[in-house]
Image: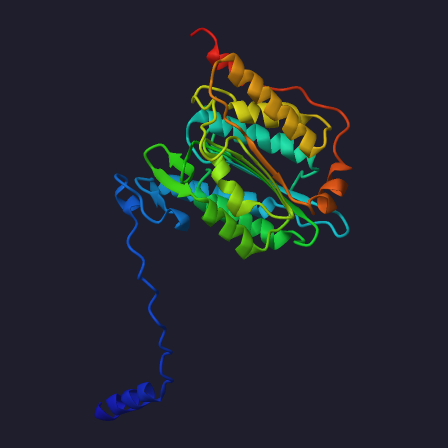
Amino acid sequence: MRSLFALLAASLLALPATAQVAPADKSAKWPGIVTGYGPVEGFPAGPELQRGRTAKWMLEDSRRMSKALAALAPQRKGVVDAYVISVGLDSDPVFGREAREAGKVLARRYDAAGRTLVLAGSDGSGASNLPNGSLTSLTLGLARVAELMDKNQDVLVLYTTSHGAKVGIAYHDGNNGYGILAPERLAALLDELGIKNRVLILSACYSGIFVPALQSDTTALFTAASSDRPSFGCRAENDWTFFGDAMINRALRKPLPLDNASAEARALIDEWEGGASLPPSNPQVSIGGKVSTWLTPLEARMPKLATQPVGAPATDALKGG
């Protein structure tokens, strides 16, 4: 017996030493969002909190996300392909409805069938066939698109719709999900993934704060409001926000160049806000000098016929007092 123990000890001593791995850096403070209450620290890092999810819900949503990512088609050689991501980051049904329809409109406009990802699990109907919109699902979607696209020629078309604050776009899924998508975080994600050719359409109050961080020579950026103004139409029961209705549901359904479509949408929003005596939201536009290198061939394939707006107009919410 002693000889057996000796043999085992000798064999263990002969094994190579396990490589020492340095512990993860934990110098950053624990973000205040962990409580779900009070001030939130570390906005640029993109804090996100999930709490109270059932195990069944989490598994089902993970499966929906995996299926959606696996279904994305690879890029086509010699073709400027668009990859569309449309995400509703708030559980108020207006954002789910808007994100779902925006995915259809943008996929049609930019020949992105099979290359479109819609993250909008809540639209008020009780249906849950799509992955939930969250900061994590958006990040995974961007990462998968970056794997599939030819970054030298292909384009990301990103539409986000949610409430907003002066620190970023809010992620708020009922009593279960909380977070902030700050300009610094979105810029860092796109830079990390090497996604340079971008149409970024951000629908939220104060979304103009994203312009300094995201504008570039190869980016076309549109926001629902300036950095110090709210936008309108985000009641939960609406089908559209003002910006979503004007930009997605009307202007981008037409075979107009992108800058002309944006100008038409802004004119509509000015008209609606003025008619309702609302303070101007002042949507922002930034189109880089090299955008035409990929936008011109992409828009050459746009459908020649417009489609009709769907849903109740955003201005219907102003009727009846």
